[in-house]
Image 1 (spheres, rainbow over the protein chains, first blue to last red):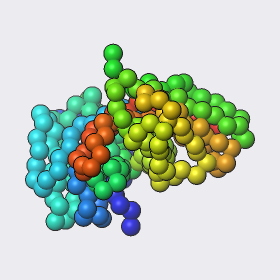
Image 2: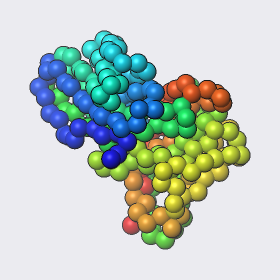
Image 3: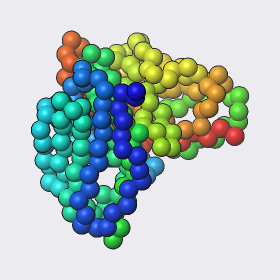
Length: 111
Length: 117
């Protein structure tokens, strides 16, 4: 079983839709949970991160972590065409200072 | 203007040739990383360095080599031993605090797309 599994894509939604992106992980030692956004032919940029179970909100974005189920989600409200990108979940364990990434999902928001 | 630069943006090489990808940062970060990204794949760690003159293998180090002679520079050489070198290569850096398990954000460069013909 891979350490981080991410729902496969691609995903296409109309503008204004609510988007839900999901990952599961296998190692309960993982401590920090990140979502990166990557535009085409660019490097990833950190969108949000959290280290505890529950929700963390930043504008139209909400990151949700359920450590008991080893499940993380990113919700995008009122999606915009500018949200069209690849979204990567990533998990960090301090034991070896390594980030482990999911495969990423490509989101397209249609005007 | 602080950040991470990678050059060149696109690189073409013939099979069997070694090639070196450049990564420079002026963020005064101690730690630097090299990742490889293939279509439909996440980022996979090749090598990382937490301090000058020291580096560790990541998950897919075979066929690659690195050096860390200066804090701001972490070049990656893709050798002829790498069986499938065509990919998008990303360099990242972060602060590093030894003895802690806190997450320190990794900042990524714009990437180099290597194509081996």
